[in-house]
Amino acid sequence: MNIIGRVTRDAEVRTLSNERQVVNFSIATNENFKNKQGERVEQTIYFDCSYWISTKVVSLLTKGTLVELLGRVSTRAWIGKDGEPKAGLNFHTSNIKLHGSSRNMNSQPSAIDENKNINLQVKEDDLPF
Image 1 (cartoon, one colour):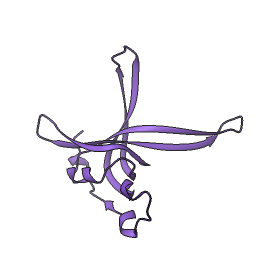
Image 2 (cartoon, one colour; image 1 turned 120 degrees about the horizontal axis):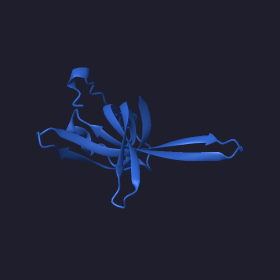
Image 3 (cartoon, one colour; image 1 turned 180 degrees about the vertical axis):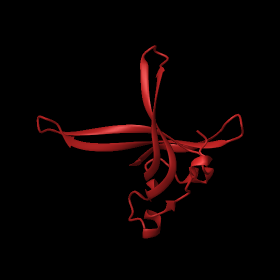
């Protein structure tokens, strides 16, 4: 599955107890549609994302960066501190394509900046989950 959205917070590297490292970040996607009454509705969906292949991408995944991700979606549910049920979407990322940097939002990005690709393909047997 492909999703395109903007990074909502700077990416972080987390080291697990088995010394494996994962890059965690989140993105927001926007969808526009007309409802039955003909009104335009904008819906924002947030994904918590994980990337297990390389930690080198952490410096590129900054708040506001437009990214295209390839991977798979999973859901999670939990009980919050307030006792209310909560739910969220996780995106297990296998490929990242950068479409623009948040640092260059006010200037015209060059073709190189706009098309940075991190095409680190993963084999099925290399997936940690």
